[in-house]
Amino acid sequence: MTFYKKGYQIVRNLISEDNSCKLHDHLNQRNDGNLTDEQINNTPSFYADELMQKIQIDLLSNIEKHTGLELHKTYTYARIYKRGDILRTHTDREACEISVTLDLGGDPWSIWLLDRDENPVEVKLNPGDALIYRGLELHHWRAKFEGDIHTQVFLHYIDKYGQYIWAENDKRK
Image (cartoon, rainbow, N blue to C red; front, side):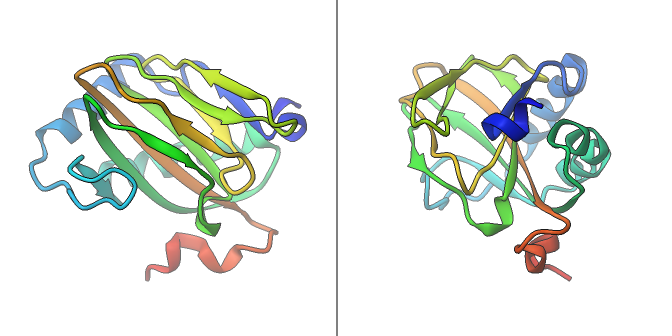
């Protein structure tokens, strides 16, 4: 299995392009995004958007199939990137043991990660495509965005039998 061996897997058409466009439009119609994200300031971000949480639940069994793990959801986080944004190299916090980066549309923008041999891997996604990866383990980033707009949602999960079970639902009640 790719995910087990490499720690990541690219999944084409995880959701339909039509569905990704609807989610893209949903986020872009909101005017209440957080603009104080510590990773990318002045870029609208949305923690636990109700529609994104529904997608996270709907995709759970599919993500389990691709990872070979039984998972619990933790949280969702969406961003509407703008020209000039940079996502610096980082690993994620414990609630992001298994991360899914789902492309919702806009101008194309690659995500990069370091594989387990520390080789840089460029991942090009189309709307509806996803990168599933071990967010705690693999460094990942995005270079300076040269387009106008790019919408992305991150769906985060933990291993049901792993050490981060305390992070289920991101400790929300």
